[in-house]
Image 1: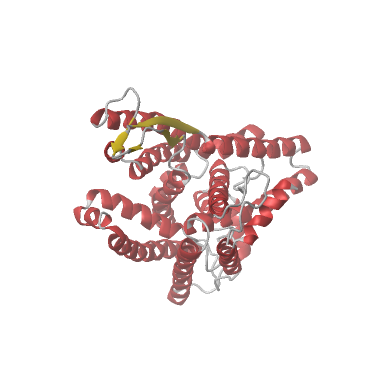
Image 2 (image 1 turned 90 degrees about the vertical axis):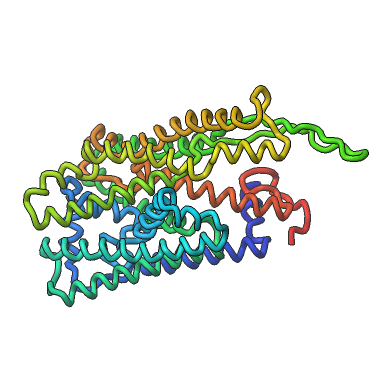
Length: 442
């Protein structure tokens, strides 16, 4: 009853209620778009190809299908989803670190961010053009097109590029007027949409006798256990104590209190997983295209099959790299130490200035290593479970560690944002308390 009362409090705040309904409306539009097919594709043959996860084509298509909420399997206008925009964002972030003009723009406040966002949109159009063109060539080479030719290619590429731009626009609307980060919420919706299919597939396989009910119990038990571990680790923090010096101004004394700086075990959140997947898609797309035209590239393309040893090794390394990369974008130890010094704060036992920045760098490196290994291990989980249980199918949703990490991580971010709204309007928090009204809250 207490939790129900806390949930009801969400709808008592006009601003929060509007944001929540707006986000849900955008997600409804996104899911409706996932049912508008692109003309000219034999869906039955495409689904047969995607079921062959041991092949390079089936592997990459199944991976993209996971983040697009099953729209690639149906070959809809939203088949590419938000991934081209994510890839473009990663490329712009990297360019901002090495290109002086972009680095200067990133430091110019709101104006610089708007210019960089516009460049990111243009780059996303280019990425979606490249991916959709390769996709069109591949489905033609596999005999999945009713009437192949330049007419089909033009309509197919145009449909996917326009769909990608529309999904990108939907994500931006969520970021501006809804709850949470728009791109993350779109990916979250796509992943959650796959869960019912995976559950029905697992139960159906047990009923058909392909797997035992004991294996089904193990799968669902692992899902609950992994989700609980993700929540526990995502909430884990290293609290660095901070002491503020006392200042006497006239007859008043300021400062002197103690506080702390929280560093999460996984400060980068779900972004390293998304970044690694987006970057790894680029060579996979190119190898898929080249292997369809030249036999000499087939061996290399098959060695990078999703779930294979080489694929998992590269994905593991990329996730660790992007964990440190994204943590460096979020936290600047020198800037953090300078701001702490300017505010009159210091860490007990650590000299302010350079020693403090070195201490922050040491803490972030140690925590970042633990967080990187944790999310990189989750990325290997589907392959390990698939091999250990000898499953006749690949659970890309509920048994994917990265999918669970993104799903649980985004859900926790949304819950935290709702919690802050409730506390700001003098309600008990959504995740705890007695759920009673402390004030009018309007």
